[in-house]
Length: 151
Image (tube, rainbow, N blue to C red; front, top):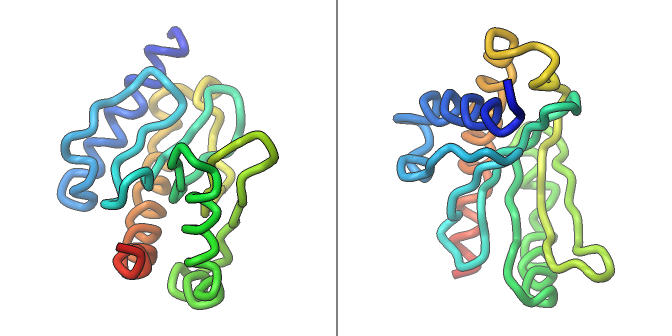
């Protein structure tokens, strides 16, 4: 199976699991890329699923993706005072990343070990897909109250 076809199938199945659980993804289409995302309700802020064809990890991310790096840093800084509380509510420490020099995006993510998509094929994907959806559901329910404060 070609990589683009593999991603399309993988994300189609993830989106089926999102039905009824993650309404933000109701109008999201599967892609031929290593990620799919949906708006978090603020301009330039997204919830993103990522998985890779050849790497053994997957992640859910709150992406701060505005065009101006200083806006993304300001959003991250506004959330930072709540970091310990956010980690506690999520149930584990999340990774927080400020934009690297020359880049504009900041993020808060949970990365975990998962199957490399190419190594297992569709039958081996199921546990990773379930874990992605469970983790995104937790990330959204944790982060949404804090994002409301930023509006």
